[in-house]
Image 1 (tube, helix red, strand yellow):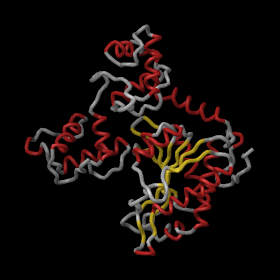
Image 2 (tube, one colour; image 1 turned 180 degrees about the vertical axis):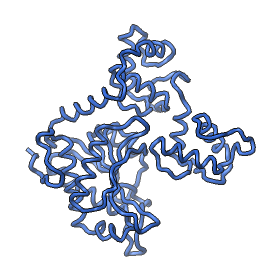
Image 3 (cartoon, one colour; image 1 turned 90 degrees about the horizontal axis):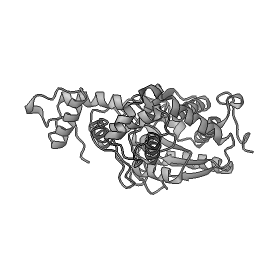
Length: 377
């Protein structure tokens, strides 16, 4: 899609302004600015991006446009059902998922995507309420949902408990686990750069090397692993998420490196799915383990963990995190990132974090000390 930024005039800008006005973020009453991306629209989209866990850049790009389109819908505006070829997406779907979760039905994560889990949960609800069991959310189903307010458990606790139980039931052994490693960028997209010509160092090459180091360690412990790309290709994040879902992976670990105009920016940060009051409880826990292990083993500046609704985090059905391993633009981080022994330490830290995710509390060691294959058998 076209990217809209300050100063642009377009019908797409007019649509974005209309949605921002509905959300109460923009005064859209001046007809002369109806299709203009002015400073008020930029301020509004920044507020929207912050609210939705997106990159706050004041630009309407593909992810912000997707989120704006989802925000148009309120539960009851349209009939909702599962479409295997083109999922219905919107805030109305997220509200339906939240309501089903609150009364004890496993609709999956309240991510606004009407997938198979939501359809199964809706079917179960309809059967128990004596409704036509067609997995279609229309007026009768909505009335039945509103009539059982007293049964609801607020705050997302049911889904959190399901997630925790799923990890506990998987057991502490890594043998048989299924993990997708996602080295960012690839192909013609080299990500961020440092240097020129033969001396150039690229994000794509560093994270691919790190992914293969971790892949070898996981495979040695009996983990089935996949890479979302090879050296010469760079699928978009939607295709990567679709690939991970098709494998039925238990976890996804996406690897990236950052850059900044300021040479003072440095350190490591980890991201998990979260938007508003909805987040991945296991993703948050996994992100915390990865962040602490990497910081402890490398001495990098701790940029902490953060919720985001980026495409890879949003569209994957399993817990997914994104590691931003330092800044190529930093004179502090750069010597580490290009050092193979540093990447070995990071791979060891990532391996330890994955193992710790599955360990019961009484067997979970202190950060930075676990060495595998201590729990391989």
